[in-house]
Image (tube, rainbow, N blue to C red; front, side, top):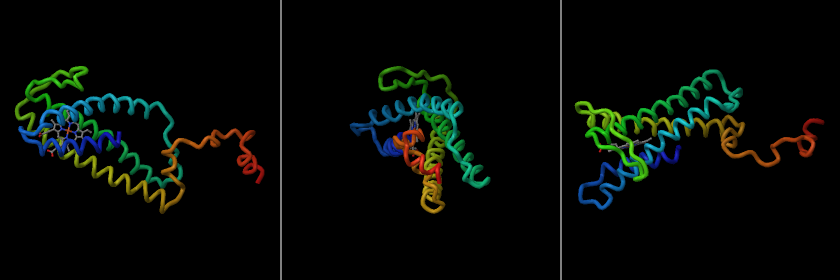
Length: 179
Ligand code: HEM
């Protein structure tokens, strides 16, 4: 999702640069909107996943750090949801549907006065906000990994085969237990 959102940010800025005579005048918005709608499904899946799975162990963090981490994580979800909704409201402001990769259509269900302008401003501000939060989040993750130690970034990688931790077949684990 992080990579998709960075790509969405880039393509959003690109849309702003396009003019009517550009070859990609319709293509880039079409891709931006289509990926955005797919991200709605991914976000819902991710939220269900988060609520039904074990969270990473944060017992090594101080209470305020745990609070800050929670705030940043839920801040991300709220921001992303609001960006997706505001994007949908820009694109459907004139009653037009969104043809997601010409695969399925998402209808316009809401039109209000000045919708395109207001949703456009909200979309831009929140998109900048999500990137700012991502920078903050990355700096915090790097601090935990390199300054505080503990190898927190390694937890993002799949566990090495050995760490399926069957002490009977893992001699290192056996020797750890003996000492
Ligand atoms: C996480 C997802 C998204 C991100 C990070 C994102 C980011 C951006 C950014 C940075 C811009 C340029 C804003 C500006 O400088 O004025 C933009 C424009 C735009 N986005 Fe998104 N966007 C996302 C999702 C969506 C979705 C889901 C839709 C529609 C279904 C959408 C539709 C649009 C449209 C139509 C514009 C052009 C607005 C205009 O011309 O004023 N975006 N987006």
